Image (cartoon, rainbow, N blue to C red):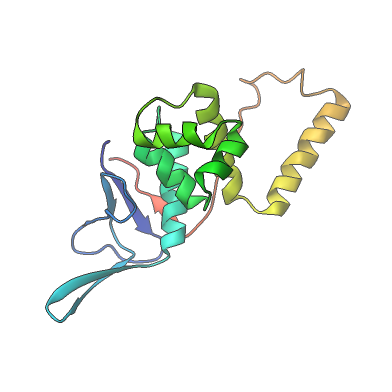
Length: 170
């Protein structure tokens, strides 16, 4: 996994990137959004908006990774606050399958991985945003325009706005 850097909008960069290991993933660095403090001779790090950070890391994973690693599958499930059984139900699999994917004993099937990615993106959206998309799809279906759409003519574009953002590679 290549290093990925994240920063908190509106904050100045810190002196040095912080290697964020608490999420269970390798190669995650924070450029700001953390505070280093010393208590009784031990260094402690406090992260600003951990939930927002995890959502942004997850968004990065589902939109930019070709294949999800076992640790990334576990991270996405935990970020959605789901048990293995709950995720399995959403993906039409068994909890044993999810456990094997997370342990790296077998690869997640392509269809299940795509559905996991879609579930994660949906978990970031509000009920109102989901309802708006469903209403737009329904209107397209009623007018019969969905079958006539050319994917090159009408590319899908999604932007998720939060306080955390991915730092684009230079």
